Image 1: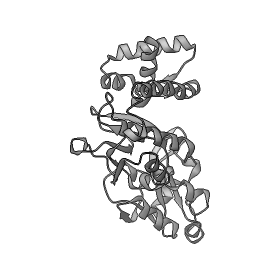
Image 2 (image 1 turned 90 degrees about the vertical axis):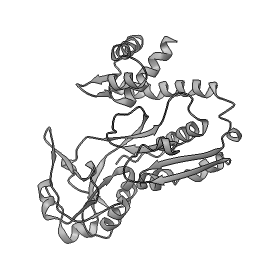
Image 3 (image 1 turned 60 degrees about the vertical axis):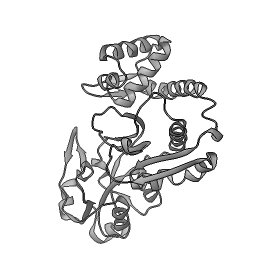
Length: 300
């Protein structure tokens, strides 16, 4: 049982990013959480985390072990609810809220297969750029990226994304490409029309992270509208790699200022109300989604 608790502590620490947050969310003290991780590292004879002042980062060994740890925990959960998890037992409505671009580019491609696998389940997907805690209004789960506000909800990390500054070949041919982020102020740029950290165009110069101002010629509410303008050669945008990775691979968009790209990656979370007694309809969707994300990485 202690080995299993160590696995859970390891997964929680990764998902929450630090021992204190993981401990609070799961009814433990930070000291108890830290002890479980130390026992696990001692048992395995490897270091699983780089411990920063505020955040934890997986070592290479930790990244490998995470897959095995999740497989064990998921297998035990599946064994405990085998009857409930059978496709003919999963029914009702599953209400999901996520970003429009994530729904379009990372859920829609495999959604028909999911619906076919669980024919008695009705899927209701609502999109919006900003996370809202609507679990008391019937929401089952949400999928969002970035820094989430502290709450009692469960946020399970499912991946990460990076923001890419880019333009079309036509724009670059007509206006040229900026050689330094400070030159963006003289270019045609577009960003979102709501308050968001996504409008902070972060770059790296040396060991420093810097935010350079842009002067948008227009602001829009959806990432796809920004993408379409950029592809038409109208200006420069900054969008997530899970959104535009195919456009980059096929040459419709060209990454800019790559020498100054920030190494920071934005975590992506699936958020739900509680860990215990998780509904089979929610669990099957999360498991199906994680398998699809693993098969179709978007990293550029």
